[in-house]
Image (cartoon, rainbow, N blue to C red; front, side, top):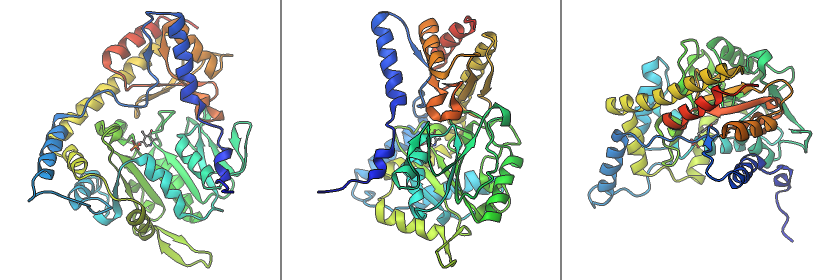
Length: 409
Ligand SMILES: *Cc1c(COP(=O)(O)O)cnc(C)c1O
């Protein structure tokens, strides 16, 4: 008899997006011809920019010629891409790092999911509520939690992010070894200021904790007091791992390229108290379990950093930012309170008094034919909130906004 990993049985099943799909399908069946617009998608809608497509073509041609063909590449990524990331995202911003502290991968989701395996199963995990589900579910799978009861897993330190604290995670009273922070945040659209993030870096240094910092939405930051990288905070290189992705920045959700920064100064401890560099452990893990990102994709990612690539992606991001403004204005007209949308492509609105997340979902669908995501799907502190995204086309976003603005609650 083969026994399974029973931790998987603790997972309550991912009902959120399947429930949404079912409700939308049922509505469409009852209302043929209704034009339903989704502001629920966490995927981009604009295509790859020309500089990226050109690089893909060129690299594909190289792969078809014997003189320039490439087989297995370095698991951590080609030097040309690691150097481009280093220069553009760090050195040019005054952050000192080295290329061998950057690990290219096929996704921030996979890296953030895999990273927890470097730590002992007894490690205490803290994460935001509401939260991007990957941080939580992967720790459940690894056996770091108890059972799921009343919307929460035993053994997790939840950091409530609500209107009262401006959706900013506060330092926990209890010990935490691993802290997941996502800023700019999915789903709330809020972003931590330099001062808020500094509190966490100082706390982690004092407690020998590790911060796993997801900045997948860094490119959407507009405010000067919001750091683009955690390494803008002095001492962060001793306590933090940073996850970044080309997915939302450059439309790579289907092309797949991301990177993770593991500074060599970041140390963790064995049970005897001896220190070990996390960088060496992650290198060992990646070289054993991962074979790298396709050469053509890494050339495409490199092209994002060219002057043309930068100009082109800035225009795409500006389009999404414009969508966010359109949605925010419409919600204001409808008399709703909304947050986010300034440093992130997500808008987090407060449902009207007495209307829970799912009831609001139904109201929006039946009265405006607009689909969004119930906040409670991201954690119990998301109850009473609702997420809209700025990733649809300008045309459909404007039409959805027109309908939203006409609603009264
Ligand atoms: C979209 C997203 C990512 C990016 O994941 P990829 O695997 O790189 O596509 C990472 N973190 C969060 C919170 C996201 O929403």
